[in-house]
Length: 95
Image (cartoon, rainbow, N blue to C red):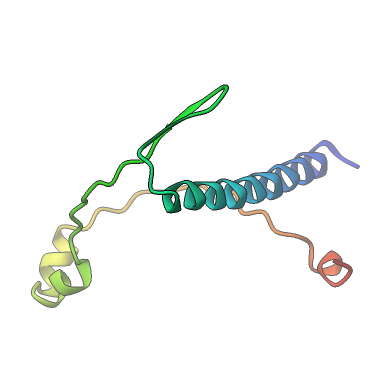
């Protein structure tokens, strides 16, 4: 196994662990929220449950009121490099 394939497998494994932990974290947060408390103190950590209001701009509605020329004139393009990792297709069948 080459160094590059080892890196890919390590990254895939870590991503899978992170996804499982995020799922677990989301479930625990939901349970805390359902309990209706604002501050909770554990043996090691404290949690504060806060409700905030956030305003967002409905870009779909905004675009309906703007011309394509205006949108084009105010659109920025930037190069973005990302790494996408997925389970190999030949291994998905075995899972």
